[in-house]
Amino acid sequence: MTDFTSDGSMKTEANILSWDRHRRALHEEAVQLGVAQGMGRESGCEGCTFCSMISIFGACFMFFLGCVIKANYPYVGEWYEPEAGRGSPNELQIATAAKNCFIVMGIYLGFAVFSILCLFYFKSKAKRS
Image 1 (cartoon, rainbow, N blue to C red):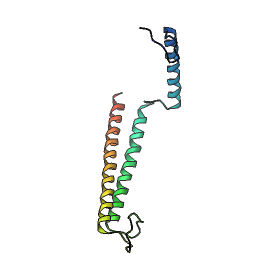
Image 2 (cartoon, helix red, strand yellow; image 1 turned 180 degrees about the horizontal axis):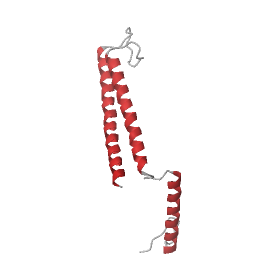
Image 3 (cartoon, rainbow, N blue to C red; image 1 turned 90 degrees about the vertical axis):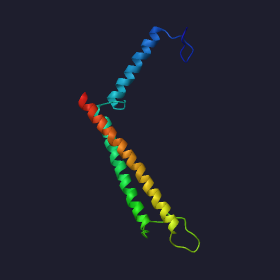
Image 4 (cartoon, helix red, strand yellow; image 1 turned 135 degrees about the vertical axis):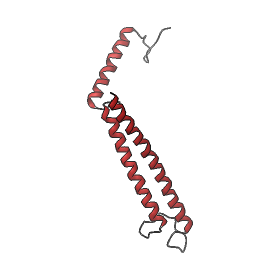
């Protein structure tokens, strides 16, 4: 079976070796620039640390926002759909908004747990090598 390249020419051993050298040169250049995957042991730890910190902040913020909405704090902002003749949200709107904030908090906590597990994985992987 004869293999062809995308431009229709036949693949030869010289073409394949040339392409392999070109691919390796591009990879080495990417490593030097720091954009290649697996550029070092610390890159996984730094990314997981950043993700876990942002997720924990998001979870804390959504918990705070859910508690404030549930308490019907007057300075939260107009997060509800106003009804004719009413200047404040009804109990159903308050309960729904607070519940949604707590659901989003749970999603943030899930991402935090996942990123912390990844952080432990990368730290144990760094110790092994």
